[in-house]
Image (cartoon, rainbow over all chains, first blue to last red; front, side, top):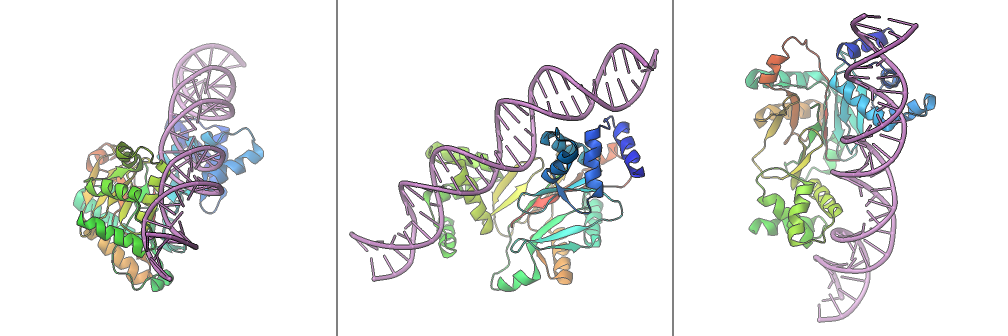
Length: 159
Length: 159
DNA sequence: TATGCAACTGCAACCAGTTGCAGGAGACAT
DNA sequence: ATGTCTCCTGCAACTGGTTGCAGTTGCATA
């Protein structure tokens, strides 16, 4: 719980208030070891405080995202998940658009890309938690008569 | 309109039907030179056929996305746009999370990344139309006392 | 051309997420 | 400890997008 005080300080320093609701949401995120949806956080929170409103959860998540304390990832079909940002634990996800399997991707690939983009365009990309869609090895075998082409997708970003 | 027949064929070959509604949506997308939202397509369509339902537009776009005839991109804050896929015209977007400026990114950066990922993980990523969020050169100057850290985002993909 | 099946449409109900507002609570200064 | 200002919360209304359903239509076959 010592990191809780740190978070409270970050909130105050940026002109935000450390309310009990926010601390509960922060607690849920910090103690979850993976991704949580807004609905899951809401359900957890209602157990000890039934008067919460889902809009409070969304608004708090937006603030935390802005402060870069949590990351937001769209893991496929409309499930936006949130995760506590633990520094030095950068990871990415490869999500198969056929079977929905999720595998991890080492950060080094994106690191190179980020450095390259920054060097040549002066644009500093946020590439620390990407979800990349495609076809996994297993599903590619069933598709092997398909020729090369592609549709696409774009992130849900931090504006 | 010769490419229309080609599209009709693609639809039929994959067990889909070429309905007038779908052809109108295809027409809107093909004649637009940029990105269109579902709502914009819907509005255009209602002019000549007022009985359309927005759900038809969404369902059609989902089919076309599946068939890789259109690409879907989330250009920042909740504006999902659709674009007719013109082969050999791959492009990406760098979107500043501070000022929302959009610049283009050459495909070569992503191409390298895709090849690398495929070689080492056997996962074939869909990297042909990405939206990457971050800070543009101008906005970075105002942020230059900030240290390195980052939140993130993830694509809305083709499942 | 007639027939039959499966896919598609429009409708309506629904769900997730957002927004405006009035009251309530945090935090800073005194 | 008290006051005041501003931010935050919960509520309710709303919007964008999705889903189930029953009737319709495309299209393959004969």
